[in-house]
Length: 102
Image (cartoon, rainbow, N blue to C red; front, top):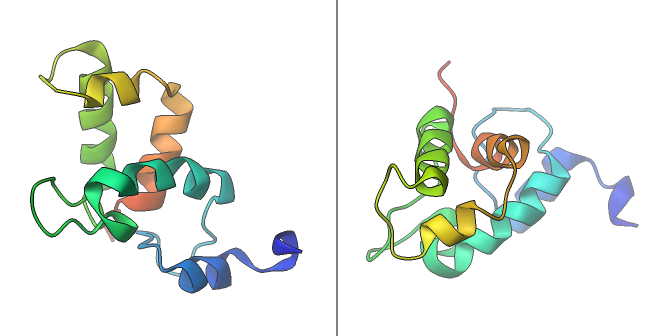
């Protein structure tokens, strides 16, 4: 039944911060992004300890993730998480969580 719910309504219902105003969220990216919330806080809105992801520029989020994956950016666990995703998946996650310039 979830497939029949419009994406924008689904985003509001689960409270995810999508950077694209009025755009339909990518449902698969929402699933992938949910793995981030255990460390980066509900909806990616960390209250300390970890950087918040919600509203971070999508391009900066994508660059951080690819840098973690390549080892260009030091990490404790993020390099392991980032290696679990393809470039396309990281882009889609970044677009779902991050903000885009207007």
